[in-house]
Length: 89
Image: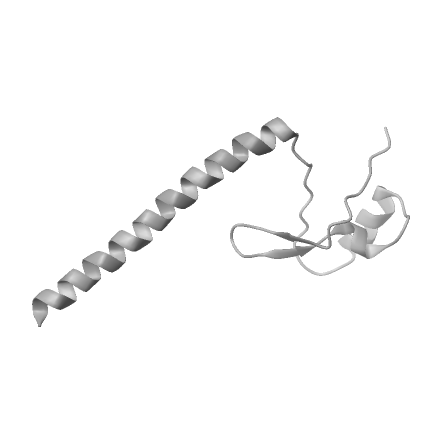
């Protein structure tokens, strides 16, 4: 089965790592040749597969929930620090 390489120039990982897309290593070459070229470079390799629309929706919902929880955590810590600082004055 022939697979198409996505043309995205960059991919971002949750840990802040930025990856250059495999397509940037050549034009019109086979996925195997592009991977060979990427493996010659320094650094970690990320290979992904696009999710279907239904899968994306499920992941997006979970990411939304997780980001809301993370934001609430950050805000509550700031508010606690501010209250502690105010009480000391």
